[in-house]
Length: 610
Image (cartoon, one colour):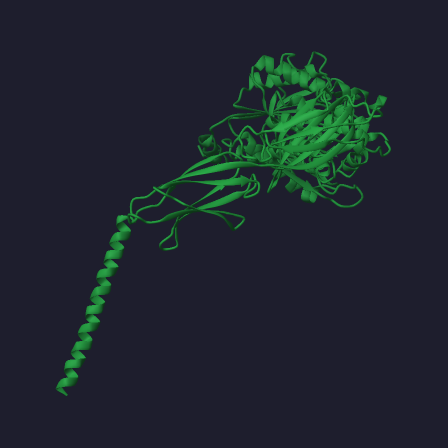
């Protein structure tokens, strides 16, 4: 019996296998103008298939009673459109007796996942949702009945309860699938999301390449496979896409951070809208967007807010959104096709900015609507004139007298508005000014017009707001400096210094010498006034100097935090190897000198004989 090369390859791949995979493809083709579903099944059949990788497809074409459940098998003849994969007899677990499913029903999706994972159990479960996508309005429609996002979440919840596990990766082969709304809905039931923030051409994902890359290395991680899908799609789109498109893989474990930051930004933005509507609105309107005018790029929104002259706490919340988004992105690529589609770039996830209209009423049913994003969005899309800020506070800086150092280390922020301003509450945000930017220190909300700030040191930025109800009617940014005497206690460890050697400790900040203190008995304390002699966040260099020889024996770099520092500086003894080297060099040098002396003496004797 002859063994084919394909069989040898199959056996070799099987020998390398360390994990199993079940890929479940949910194809919603029972719609007007469906994508080419048969072509994608033929691509799946053309791929190499190995033991331990099962591809199960539920496809619902446009005719009545023609839904099919397939287990994909290899077909050597890719150009023959006939589907060779056998239909599975599911006993009505997925497809009812009439042979027709509704892909817009969460029960259908739940039944499909449970059947596939139960009959084809695997280490890794991948769910592909295939069809048309309507962003926050849903996906995979059956006729005019889409699978809404709450229904998608419900289906995954029911699946999780039956299987007692989540989905390792959800892949969206739909337009506008990479949205914060979808990611947040499924984040508790899946680990990774792969999808496009922009349009996806009808051809969709290059399934043959994707499956080939999976079967060639079944030991790869789910995260690595997600990157493979992104790379395969972008490689295809470089020559196959007629429109600008993108594809990204996202770690859903970081979605809560994005949503938390967006909620903080929304609460602050809504409160400040009275004073800063034009700036926040322009940040949104200038953000990257899809073909849907009010579907904006999340990271682009955050960048736009950070670039504008808005209160520091608003920028801080936007920065949290940007950082969490960056952490969530496993891989993201964009293809800009140019032309008239208006897409310059995409940074990953999109988010909708809903209006207060009947058209957007269903947005309130989404999980993201539990935050303040939808209220802030309504305010952003409205028109509001410029309103001047009310009177702000005064700042007084004083010594607390508790430490007796006569340095200003406490400040009070006090409002004294006239009777025409009836402020109801106050907020004070304190930021330390570090060399690399602002670092938030504290946030204080008060019902009284006096806020006390202590326990912080350095150059400070104070963002102070006064509210009437939920709206800020007065916002002012002020600067202050609080000081502190910090001690740097240094112990010098050494064993080879000549007794009586004089040591000094020298501190440098910004390449300038600050202090020079004698180090008696191997220890000393250097005192610095912060921020006068070194600011918080600044790196200073500490040197131990041999006074007799003017040499630096040891040095350390530390960052100033405003707290006392205890250091041990080591002066190392010469090693035995270095001593041996010195000794050997000395012997060689001595022999060389003796040789030179002998030659000179011999020449002297020779001249005397002549």
